[in-house]
Length: 114
Length: 113
Image 1 (cartoon, rainbow over the protein chains, first blue to last red):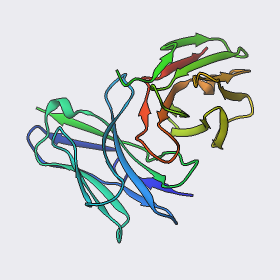
Image 2: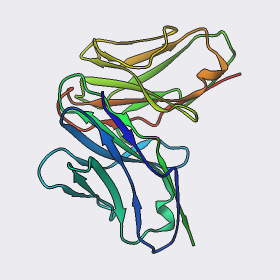
Image 3: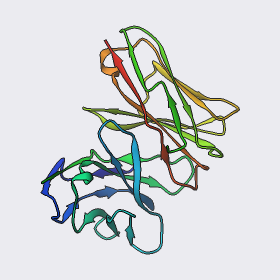
């Protein structure tokens, strides 16, 4: 079985500052990695994913994440955050075989302050 | 609009009752996953169906059951409801169970009073 640990439950940051949301996973088999964002009173939206290939993946709104196999990490970063980035961020993994499901971390609440 | 439709959006019901949550997957997606999101448990996988067949089971209570119909929509049935069942229930769909991204619906918020 796989597991995901998001080390910070809350991350307060000022607008235009850089941010890193940490995610570590545990799995005995190869995995796919995902970051989802949940805005207040909304569903989960895919932010970015790592399936294979380049270990650095980027989203259209300036976020990026780097898959580090040796450290079993998939930290999410943004060089300059906006008020609108305030949301809950979930890291998730799935095995790359049949019947797989997403296993989520506990979530990190990003709070961007003016 | 993600393409995954969940109804109803909100549901308030009393303890002991039974409810049915519905999910219509994205067009062409064969696989449906159900998740429960609560403050104390976080996002927990409940059950997965693929093309009408149960494929995987997670932390789903015996009071809960699900099925996927020939038109690929899925229903999650919750019975003998308890206060602790109050949560946000998400459905996600995927093209198959090997490929494609997971697309989530906007969820059904269940409140048991």
